[in-house]
Amino acid sequence: MVAGEGLTYAAAGVDIAAGNRAVELMQEHVRRTFRPGVLGDLGGFGGLFALEPGRYRQPVLVAGTDGVGTKLKIAFLMDRHDTVGIDAVAMCVNDILVQGAEPLFFLDYLAVGKMVPEKVAQIVAGVAEGCRRAGCALIGGETAEMPGFYPEDEYDLAGFAVGVVEREELLDGSRIRPGQVVLGLASSGLHSNGFSLARRVLLAEAGYTLDRQLPELGRALGEELLEPTRIYAASLLPLLKEGLIKGLAHITGGGLVENPPRILPRGLSMRLDRRSWPVPPVFRLIQENGKVPEPEMYRTFNMGLGMLAVIAAGDVDRVKARLEAAGEEVFVAGEIIPGRGEVEFVPDLI
Image (cartoon, rainbow, N blue to C red):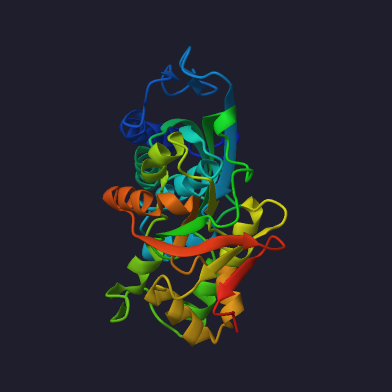
């Protein structure tokens, strides 16, 4: 700065021109997600979405918000930023899907230490890809440059999803009955939970590098850890609309121990047979290298099942077949039993 000149926002570390360039680079990705109901274009103070007149009798809006968490540390270390946006969308839309809602639109919040337009465009391209997979529109967001708050090469990413469901079709646990069957839908890996423990074990304790090729994984460790969270909307929505799904549990933080009880009505429990699905190698890698107790694994990670679906016993074959035809790997994982609102495992966790 020349003596006598006043300070500028750019001199303080916020580059408005770079922010505008980032918006230009991300526009094409965002517009590809637009669906009927989107009003206007990018650049407004708020995103606009209109529910189709006459389509709904008693529409209920369902909203969810979440972030990617410390999985972002893996993206920083690998300098790869095109997948974490999928995670941001997945964590939100899978949550609202659990209540029977069709995802309508999504907004993202991205806070960066330094505005690098090309990197921001990569991140938002991932968000747009997640929206495409979920069938929802990316109708807005915010990118904030925050020098001195985040390191220059780091950022945080969160999102907000809104969906809609008819009031009479809302999944609230009231349709769950004893004798119903629990189907487990395979996860794509760790998804976006437990990364503080995973990083501590694999990178700090075991000393693996992210480019380390691990035979049990069939690829480099970094590729495994950055695998995006699976989005289940396209597979489950048709079954939800037909009333074939009685309950859903998204297996996120809290794992298979704490998430299923959130959907169980009073007086019922869920019994899961741990022999009914294969646990992916990455979880055993963490458990063995960190000497992590079995109960801690099941309370922290999804252990290979990203979503649980409760269905009538007589619908097992057709629902399983339809999910598999939609690209899901599905296991008959358990059943609903009388109980105290908890998960019982066969065999027990030790």
